[in-house]
Image 1 (tube, helix red, strand yellow):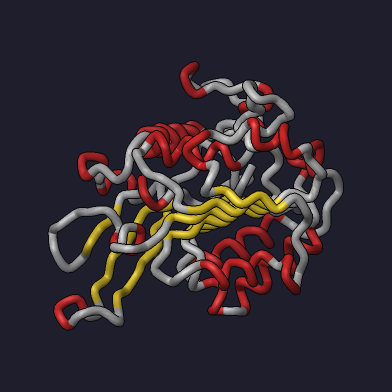
Image 2 (cartoon, rainbow, N blue to C red):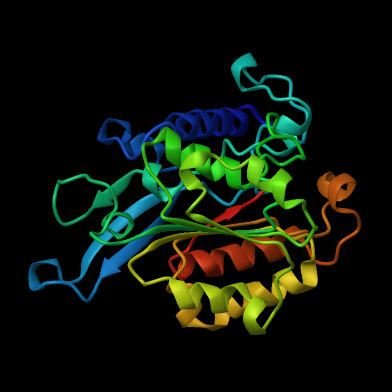
Length: 298
């Protein structure tokens, strides 16, 4: 990032994602010039009607680079355009670098038709969010203010901006909250759709989130998981369950996870943690290879 060419690539990628986030996939944004800046997830239809048999499609996703966060934050750089500068919590919690499935350019290699990825919008499919470690809906104990939009509200606002709606939200939070304070923050349009479980998750039993996932989700649903409970041992156990159990991984379309490892730039926020940054790359790559759009939660 201290090299001009790498800085310019990061700026181009970030500006592109910021534009993409503002809408569901728009064909006018599709351009091969971004191929060198982004990763792609490839999908093959194997159980479809005969004319689609072995159809191959691909979709952009942000690359696994650097600290797996917004590349223009955390570290200090001199040549960032003023429009892209962030300070304080807005920089630390930046979510500008996420390229979610509904906004990501999608390419069908058998025809010239460009459209929204069909696995996101099948007839009868539901859009479901599991927010594991949800905090308050606004991120803070305030009915008006929000704190860098830490969790559930960020997803809600992204969907609302793009004229999409969640059919169900399951939110887990271990910290005890006043019911009145929590529910006063919830927008009217999701009151009946949100289930708030005010207790911590566990690696097995009725509070294992994947057991709940399997009980309510169908394969054709569009499912987003956010895992951020700041308990590395339990988080890693839950990740391993996804990696080793196709009945779980096959239900997840997108996942967000902040993996705490030992890296100098993040020691101020994470403290001294076991593991290395390369471990995160390995796990995220494996999850992407399972078909999960894996993102690093800040």
